[in-house]
Image (cartoon, rainbow, N blue to C red; front, side):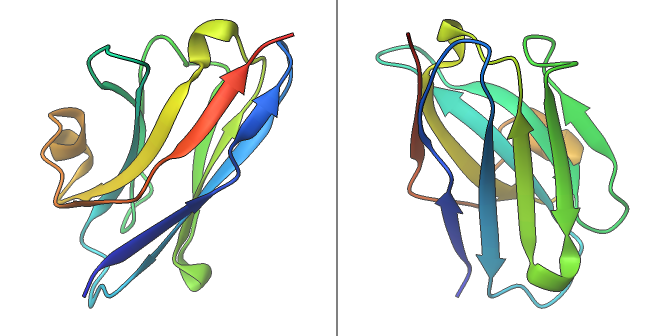
Length: 123
């Protein structure tokens, strides 16, 4: 059974940094991608970033490009999202989710997702 566990959320001041972690279990191969998407209040979900577990190819939404960095540690089955220069508009619940590929993740074609972690950027 596939399971995703997120950690690392919290409250941070504008300009600050946080690192989210997503640990996956239950996969029998590395032919998948993990993506992060976020949802704030009643807004629609927004894709943030995704990474291929097999080849490390990455995608970033324009809103976070240059500020967020996604990486993977295959030995730990964990994907990280390093978030720097955080802005109040980054405030949202962040979810990690799996998809067959980075392209599928961009299209929100998720198979499994975690419970979400709250990020609040406020002074």
